Image (cartoon, one colour):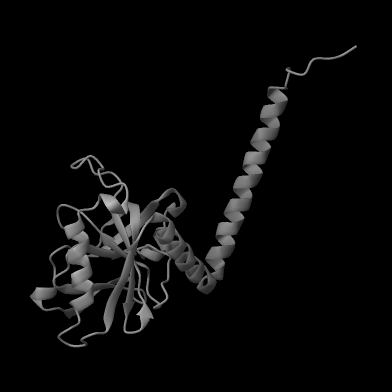
Length: 215
């Protein structure tokens, strides 16, 4: 199995797009997690069926949230997705969440290309209110049988806040992987040189003739 943190980037989050890896399908009570050390999925635990996931659950590669894990994603789809797939997603917003006193925010997404519903979900407000209520209820109570009162949904916020959370998570990841950070900076530098060179030679081939000579 590929190591998703090596073969995938977070995606172009500034454009509102992400690469997302799915861990848990909608309706599953299996707490499946990505094991970074072994680069594979593992079953962490089996939850009570009363607390099966109300939506697909996954993560953004090359990110680290404040709890030390990859930044989580709540992926809204009409049908359950399969553990282990990766997909391109549209960012709708973020669920601000605290688990055991630690920040554990969840980015809310939908598929980037959903031809079944015509890409009708473009922003957080487009989601049915009942969907957000079910998600909020689940995360406020899914640990009640073992650790009651340890989780709290603070708020649902939109795209701009989600981008800030994602940016901070990418920064944390790069701080722990300076080799990757150096590689990305080198690639940006090379791309800038390429763009500047192409612009220079394009100007040579197409000189500005709009300026009239004066006698």
